[in-house]
Length: 506
Image (cartoon, rainbow, N blue to C red):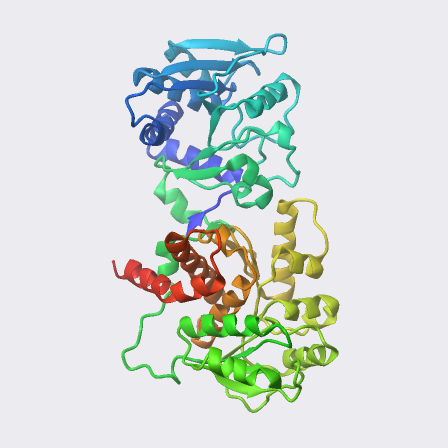
């Protein structure tokens, strides 16, 4: 996992590295900018064509990074102009690098801050770093507006200027640089993982600058970004003596009249994720549909012909998933209440099961610890109420998981998995082709399968969400993101698991 540190922890990592490597802060800045330059060189300077760069530098250390980059670009025989934004005396490292830079520059002040950008130039945004604590104002706000209105391509260094790295305040679009790429040093910033900031951050890339491995190892975070290597370590080794009984028994309670597709998708994903035995409890009318669509699954018919209404107490189970396509009939609502009271196995709650919980909040208090809830943002809003920003939404997510002792999977880009002890894991896989009805049903099937195979709820959630997105990425590589179906994702699941197995064996 990649730690997603707070701004304070990132500063401490810098200081620890300076003290224990040891290295001067000026040399650490040089190293960081050199690594960013290598990325720019690889992606923008491969051709013989000379490029034009406009480097906007504030007077802090982010501006110092920009000055080093400007010098390196000048040495690489690129056309460079620095726009120095007069915001004060300047940090010592900024002033040292200003002396080293011998190229063209223009000072922007409150009295004179007009500038021109050629349409094919590349802007390097180095105005503000992660320490910004209030909205941009004055002439600097005008500079940012001008950058955003230009046709130039923008690369932000460490963080787009004007963006709060970890603040509850909603950003004003006009006052934050809109980058195509963000080159962030060593750690992703929490703000990058929020939907509301996608407009500013663009495609972000972690640039390793050699901060102390000792500091990272001994400094835990409460926020993490999943990686393939870390998730692969969660995957259990296959047992050559395994049989269908040892690979877990799962029950999916899914479907109602007109919504049997959700049950089929969940069932197929469950089976493709390695469960030994799968049963589906479905309305009586859907027997022929299910047995022809998913012949590998056993069927438990509900007494009601159109929706779920009864609790099957005699089934031997290791895990249970409920919600896809079940509707919210009164009998289904009563069934969910009974299930919560009587079930002794870990459960996955999705879709209408979550909507029933939201309509009956007293049910939530009776949930046994260690289940997995998988709301999308709309369902989560029904559970917890409104929020003003994505940062506030994250706090509501953590609070809900802690109060009710449940694993909560808030679906979306960088799906957030909240653990009851306060940790949150953000998922790094997945793509826009998965933004279609049925993808969530597939996730329910995957998670139910992993719980049945005796993964803990925490590991099942982290592994299941990652492999769900990885399968989506594999399907997108083959088909593209437009027109991709949840069925395509499900068919790619064995390949996704194999990739994790191969990653772990290396």
